[in-house]
Image (cartoon, rainbow, N blue to C red; front, side):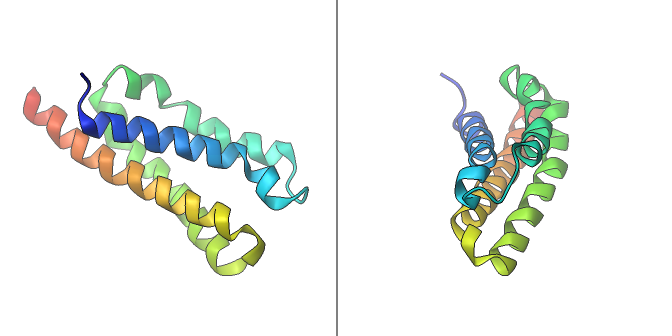
Length: 111
């Protein structure tokens, strides 16, 4: 059975991927699929390291989630049409950040 923090990391990453994939549906045709692809691509890079429990991946994914947290907060304050998207992006990026930090500590103590 995997550790609960690893499960929460994978869940938050998949939720963030799903939220970024659904951006054109939230925006009702205002956002092009090109921008959606640019938002999804950086999230696919650490997927292999998270699944295989690489400590280094969990260390640097916090920097990656900062970008999505900034997107979520800025859309939350500036664009009322994308409020649901902004809430989901902020929640999933915060969850991924916190769970990756604590799982990094767990993996370091385990070694």
